[in-house]
Amino acid sequence: MNSNSHYTKEQIWGFLSGIPDPEIPVITIEELGVLRNVEITLDKVIITITPTYTGCPAMKLFEDEIISTLKSKGIENVEIKMVYSPAWTTDWMSETAMEKLRKYGIAPPVKGTEDKGVLFSSDQKIVKCPQCNSENTQLKSQFGSTACKALYQCNDCLEPFDYFKCI
Amino acid sequence: MEKKDALINYCLRLGDSSLILGQRMAEWCSNGPILEEDIAMTNLALDLIGQARTMLTYAGEIEGKGRTEDDLAYKREEREYYNTLLSERPNGHFGDTVVRNFLHSAFFYHLYQALKNSSDEMIAAHAAKSIKEVTYHLRHSAEWLVRLGDGTSESHNKVQESLNNLWEFTGDLFEMNEVDELLIKEGIAVDLNSIKKDWDKTVNDVLERATLSRPEDEYMQTGRLDAMHSEYLGHLIAEMQFLQRAYPTAKW
Image (cartoon, rainbow over all chains, first blue to last red):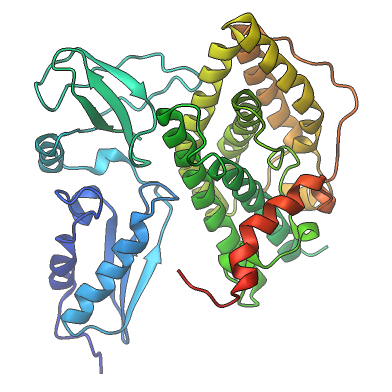
């Protein structure tokens, strides 16, 4: 007898889709594209996730959250499967998620602008200031407060802000 | 040698080089010359340690003796580490770190580009994932190298000296033995001679922009393939492994 049979795959996906990113709580693991698959087998539920960055410390928190969320629904046997392929990309992020980021004060990834110049940042993409919407901004550092963000500053309103890197 | 043993060794080489370079970068935490660089260098550490986790976990799985990534990172001795000699070089001053990271990131970059096509699915996935992060690492160090090399005469002389000192550790990056031979036949590993050509081109391009001169290939240090290390690795792992050695069952 399948102990998890009283929930469908869609229902389980629904329980998990709302789990927020611990560092950027306005977006969820579903919107981020970290939650990849839900599979129900005879004796357990297998949740497949993929890391944004290999060393992202939030991944452990995602795992803990997934397990405790399912536990609260009475699902005890959970396996978390981490996959690396296809490699996570910011292209999976929905328009809604990008808008949420902007409102939160983080400039969302500028789609299709993955920096192709390997050695030097050749193509200067336009990253709009999430505060005043100005296009007159400058890169301060490729590495920001978390692995997925770069540090920018607006030349008009002078506010520093995070940019969600496009990878 | 069996394919299984060769594959374990190959994964340890990849994982250990990331781990040791990651630990070196972590040593910069709170010691960076400016706040942005402190953050950048700890971000690099995080990526590298993440990359190490994937490969060490995989090595443990292939081995099949129940060793986890933590067992491999914290319970091996110096002579069981297969990291590159370059990765364990001390941080020195900021310029030393920039040069070491540049030479090493260029190596990782071209290696992962090639390993994306490995016939081993896990290694191919690891390479495709890591290349995105390593691209940032390479650009970060290359930009700094140009800034310092083409900066003041003092910064130029300092990084030229770093380059001269570190050069003898670059030969080790490209050495191969029967492990490579076996895995290249299987389509798993890549021929490092071909990586060397790409690496040379990247290194030459950046050195030229940085107005630095490429040192002559004279005496090259060797040892990675036999897990022979410089005196620095022992000190590094003593610090890295301290907690697990002192409190063997400690968990985060």
